[in-house]
Amino acid sequence: LKDEKVKVTFNLYDGRKIEAEGKVGDTLLDVVVNNDLDIDGYGACEGTVTCSTCHVVFKQEDFDRLAEEAGDEERDMLDLAYGLTDTSRLGCQVTLTKELDGLEVKVPESVNDARS
Ligand code: FES
Image 1 (cartoon, rainbow, N blue to C red):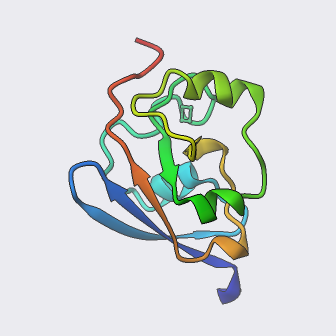
Image 2 (cartoon, helix red, strand yellow):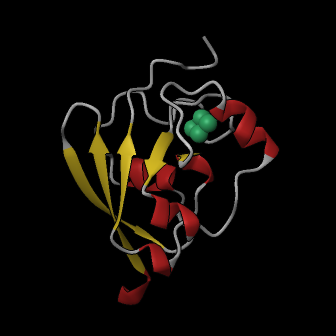
Image 3 (cartoon, rainbow, N blue to C red):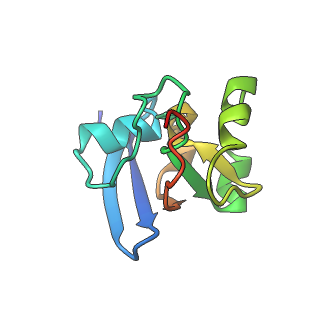
């Protein structure tokens, strides 16, 4: 099932670049967790949409080909995210599709854990 793999590069706010692989159907949070990626504080609420630490910023063209738009819950939480942009999403709510292979996202510094 090699063709179901999706490559993702995370460009961190501190200048590090982390390449990882996920599967179609994984969320970006799954990719971070399954690969044990060292991204400080990422995904603090484990995908229950009560933090904003999984905030990622897409390039416009990638943002436009995401399978689903942000739901209400996600949008409310994004409003609290530090450094919100027009192409921001919560990584735990973004599902990988084949079209997204080679995706690059920016991971802004997550100073706002909405739970604290
Ligand atoms: Fe908390 Fe995505 S992991 S909102």
